[in-house]
Amino acid sequence: MGKLALFGGPRTIGDEQHLRSSWPDMGLERALCEYTGAKYCKCVASGTAALVSGLFAAGCGLGDEVLTVAFTWTATVGAVLRVNAVPIFADIDPRTFTMDVEDARRKITPRTKAILPVDFYGHPAPIPELVALADEHGIPVVEDACQAATGEIDGVKLGNLAHFTAFSWSGKPIYSPSGGGAYLTNDRRLFERGLLAGQHPTVIQGLAHDPDVVKYASMGGTGDNLRAVGTDAMQQLLDADVRTNARIRNCDWLTSTTRACGACRATASSRR
Ligand SMILES: Cc1ncc(COP(=O)(O)O)c(C=O)c1O
Image (tube, rainbow, N blue to C red; front, side, top):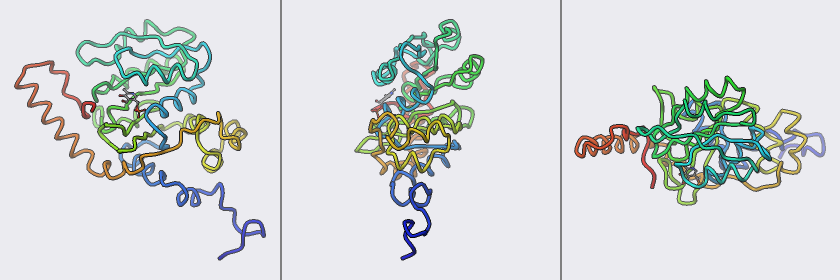
């Protein structure tokens, strides 16, 4: 054994190698970055935890508005309330059941701190258009892709499109019996601030560089525990596209058979 840090040996805490070996989520995080093309990923306790991390990272707090949709699972709105913000509902497009960009534009106010679209039934919301709208206002899109972890738009995987994206493993395209989820982003600042919503101090200390984040690291940010479970979702990630493509084929068949809404050609699976 080498010299202990106490006696002048190499420091292990705060070193990525240490984190890799100590936290089982690290392998899945790297795989998710590779799969989606996103730069940063953190596995967390659930999709809800990922949404809370995103809204916290966006700086949402008391009285701020988060523009979202009512046609969703309760956790979307629950996450907004969890950070003491106010949900403001934009209409949905009757064809895709996802956020209507023009109505979102109408409902943005100076108090809007984030746009939270939902990829409902696995169908991606119009993320590029919403990102453009959010950029006009200097706020992030925190995408609820909990039902759409394998989805993509024009060949770009979800996770690599919005400012911040939340995935869930509970009964979704990528599944773990113990649940869990992850957040993905290309924005280092959002990645680091998201850690403060509920990661263990050693994880924050190991991953964060921003002094504004590091100063709260030793107490674990908010003190919540949103730490990863469900890291066995890795197995599902390996053949996620095969299963998603089978679902798309089934959906196409159903659509052509029933002549139902053509918009249900989801790029990810439907829920549960
Ligand atoms: C649209 C949507 N958002 C968020 C969540 C929350 O995910 P989790 O159950 O992993 O917290 C779900 C889960 O069903 C969902 O369907």
